[in-house]
Image: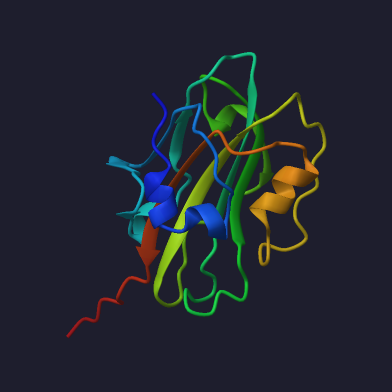
Length: 172
């Protein structure tokens, strides 16, 4: 059963990044042994490497995954909203992004100040996307515009986590 959108409303993911949708696909995201659930905290040092993402769905369906930070550079002044961290298209259902085409390579969370939301949004494609141009910049990306431009429609699954800058360990 797909997840509820309630935590996405409370976390302002619906509104800031995506529009209201009905989840129809289950997507599981893990950083090492840590399972990502809506609103959980992930240390940036745990998220340096690409997460393990499992997507259910039919193998004859294709999906696009987008990961963004709508709080860049600061949650109180998100002048770079959204900062895009990862884009993968043509992911077969029942598999993972490793089976898709990476449009923009993964960049782990690097929040300079405050608590940032990192959002993974999954779209079901209407068919193979073919050549998709990499965004000119990671800053000021729009998940809505990207999805509209590629005729992806509304998301089918979304999960988000929070991260903040880790303190620098000082040796005495």
